[in-house]
Amino acid sequence: MLTPDRPTLPPGLDSWDEPMRQALAEARRAAQAGEVPVGAVLLGPDGAVLARAANAPIASADPTAHAEILAMRQGALALGNYRLTGCTLVVTLEPCLMCLGAMVHARLAALVYGAPDPKSGAVASCLDAASLGFVNHRLAALGGVLADDCGDLLRQFFRARR
Image (cartoon, rainbow, N blue to C red):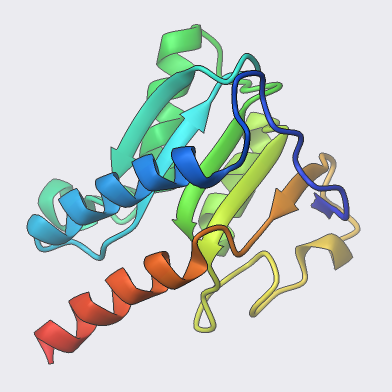
């Protein structure tokens, strides 16, 4: 469940633009591999990058290999804990329901995303996650960070495939 709170910038960051640029670099890496260009960066409570990941469901033959899931897996291994308390996930596209559910289970503090996803976005576009009363964890969320850059990358990718 999301809160109306905006995520707090970790120490050393002046804006969310730099971690989103890192997520965009991951998304470009996914596109080069023929995957839908989505990238994610997981920041620890101190602002340090714990993990970076690009979408990889095709290459890994794994429907759960979304950038968000892969970044959280790497971060959990780095921390030695499946709970990512105090961490912030920065992702180029509004997460789907599967990824949002994983974020809740991981107890992420915050989510920052770029482009909205009108087809399957579970934060605001297709589902108002805040209305799900059974969700037992709340995370702050902020959308629209470098949304034009994130959306352009996705549009270019799909345009080239048609």
